[in-house]
Length: 393
Image 1 (cartoon, rainbow, N blue to C red):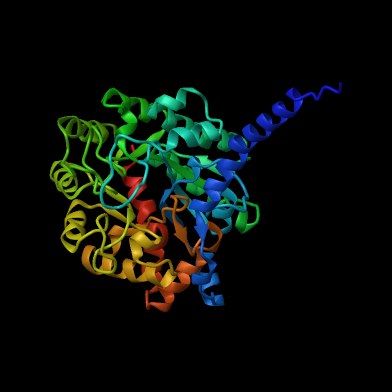
Image 2 (image 1 turned 180 degrees about the horizontal axis):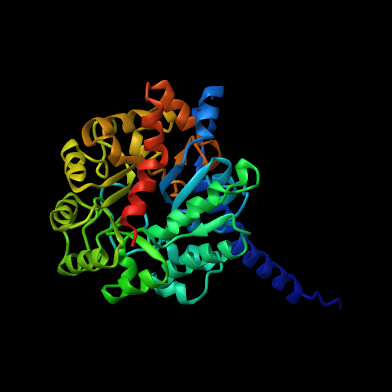
């Protein structure tokens, strides 16, 4: 009788399934959730190319660190990596860490009881400590950026203070390589203070690990604040009020993106320093629960805040660079030029027409919309760089 050896076959199938889970699944999820719609792109003139090359560009929100792809790149997936940002002439990029998202995520109402990131962390081969600890997820993603910096030969520089930012900008200006290889300056943010796991001392932990910005909430209500997409949509909790004070004392920027209207109003009433809204849109050009009303824009201007305009449908009701320009124009008209910046939400499970290396299309759209060169310089990065140089510790 011939005995068929089944164990090696079974083992091979198991190994193939494991390989698919640990490598193919993260690639598929990334590719399916971070799409580039080139059909919405626009033609770029020589004038726009020439102007773009002279800009000091900054962006307030990029979720690159969540995904299983090299920080330095270049990658064919998603919207950015350091190589593509450099090709787009981005000088300063705020990199966010995503620690928890709800199943069935939507803009209207989400429970805090479920979590998508655990399975993604396991499939992406994150350390086991990140499977249960939300704080450790933020620290792990921050560490990814630090490891990329260490291997970047100066092409990525993380800054943690205003003086470090100014020094990094000076080093970038002295760069001897090709224009498309200039260093990218990175700043760490975390999206939602569920990351502190209900303990105010974890603000100090985040700060010690280089985080200089934090959003109060993400897609669900947490122990700090209500979310625009949560169930209760409440204001700041007692912990949230203490957290805001602790962040300001340390020089950590408070990000009101995703905050509920109640939390937004309460945070602005308590804030002693300017805040940011890192990524979003305006209700006048795109109605939606997370986009800013004119009254909110005026309140942010009175606070001295910085407002990042996003590139995706939920922010601008489209993805064309001209839709971005339209939202920027309204924000300027209501809040004032000095308060408006870019807040792309690249790699934030979004579909956009403009990737890191095609950012010149936004410059073109601003020119097409009648923006002056001074306005373009301000919005494309000078406002953000000035704000950070003043308000980082």
